[in-house]
Length: 236
Image (tube, rainbow, N blue to C red; front, side):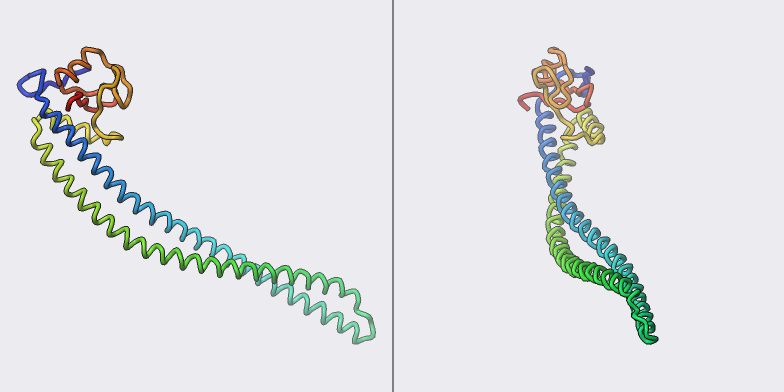
């Protein structure tokens, strides 16, 4: 494991700088929590908008099915009129016209089925319109609420960023440079780690007893060779 030497080539640095790093770690985690709070508000709205889009798509689908059913109903009614007229014509010339009875019955049966489907779809459209109105109202309410929360969270983040900037400026150049390099990697759970039973707490990379002593006893500035997080010595 490579030792990143402090200024003037010293191998042991003041524990005070690690207290600064620990404070930076704490403030950074506070910032992450505020960012999560903003993301949660965006997620709330995103889910509602997704439900609204799904409702709109379902409405379009049902309207298309309704159009097809109405066309079918029109054709059935035209056929029914034709069969009834043909039967009436036969009866007018003295014939029974019974041969059209089955066709008329079938057309009437089909018409009844289509009519029931149209009525069902009509009720579904009413339900969807009511649901859409409710979701739209909820989105408007949550948008206002979310904006207030996000504005507050962003103000907190602004203050934390100022605090982080001041803390970084107080660090010696080697600490500051290393911190910026590691922070730029956007590592999950932050830029810092500790020793834990001879390993890096986060990635479990094994470190030697000498390295562990140099980190926790001599307070040397070191990184984990695997996850590249900065080791904070115990006591800082």
